[in-house]
Length: 522
Image (tube, rainbow, N blue to C red; front, side):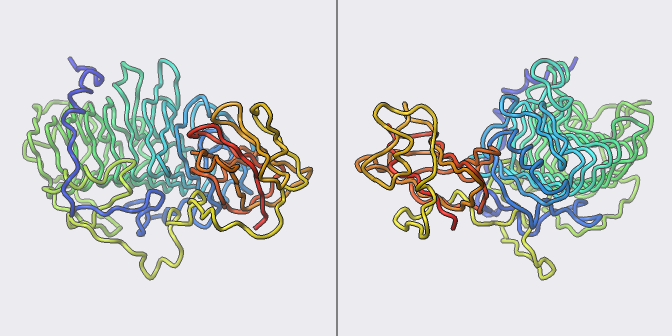
């Protein structure tokens, strides 16, 4: 009888690989993709560039992600959404608009294209909230964690899939993601990475999938054979019962992955599917490759793999393991270039690179670091190439020039401390100030008509300098986070037209005293 995944969780975590020695990986900025961009099958069919060339916005809630999608000029207008914080049911609502089709119980990427969602700063965690891609194309999801998404119990989301794709999806690159559950179907979970109903040209790279009954599938039934052209490389599958992945029809390429504690079966090629399986490391697992639970066989081409403490079941009518001595029974032609790490170094490379929060580290294909650079045929930055971070701390000793737009404007905010006034932040007088009733709170500057702002200067009253800790600058009308960071001073962000701008103090070392909330057009 199968043991629930949840009961094995402690043991699995206790045996997770530690970081490899230096010299095997390349560290890159948190909000920047590898300069070479998408890899694998996501490079085909015109390529996958996500929101390249479009606006970059910040989001700290699911609602703000949906607002960013709905605020575009069209459903295909490129956009990069930088996400920081925990996204959950409590901060995710349905948003309507001509350029979107969203939902309240998931992050919905439906009937849209040209979008990048990337975790930045302290990280992006989608907690019990799945990401659903439907009838969409050219999507990048990078440096995020999606955990504990359920199809039964409470709360439910996305049919229990961490990331799910269906209905004519094309060109998706998921990179440096952590997808995890806390059990199997009996505990309410389904797949971590599912593709069905005509989903093609997908790459999953440098990601961790763990502690789930089902790793993922390509094709929802034996008759759903319209999916395929999927690449899996440099991923860690750990403490997974089966479906690593389940492949029904189509073609998939698995290389340089580390499969550890596959408890019932691993790569399940069936219903006419073809799997090319190169230089992977299989460890402490059972039936890591073959056709399982069906009499409709698939096939595989194998080379360079290492099988470390792998056990194989006896063949049967619905059970055709590839081992104990896996041999190729088909050939698969791969249309894109790729370089293989030797299988012997895959555990070290993958443990240091796979998953969110790893600095987007990558391998150069030689088990050693190499800084990738854009090739001559790449004249434009990839969608997540480093760009000036709107939250980079400015020099507070360098005050902005131009007209302070706050003078003569209105103001309001959350509860204020006794003896202070919202108007004190826009009177040009450093001897007066506003304080929140506690250590956190918000103060806003507002105008009677839309006003363009690209810079603010938060000036603390004498004697309170350095009290303000973390903050967010928000477009009050849309809820969009224009900037976030720590400390008072000059804060810049892309120019935005708004009627009300809010400075939210989310952390402080004492009682903040904001003497002036200056606003500038440039």
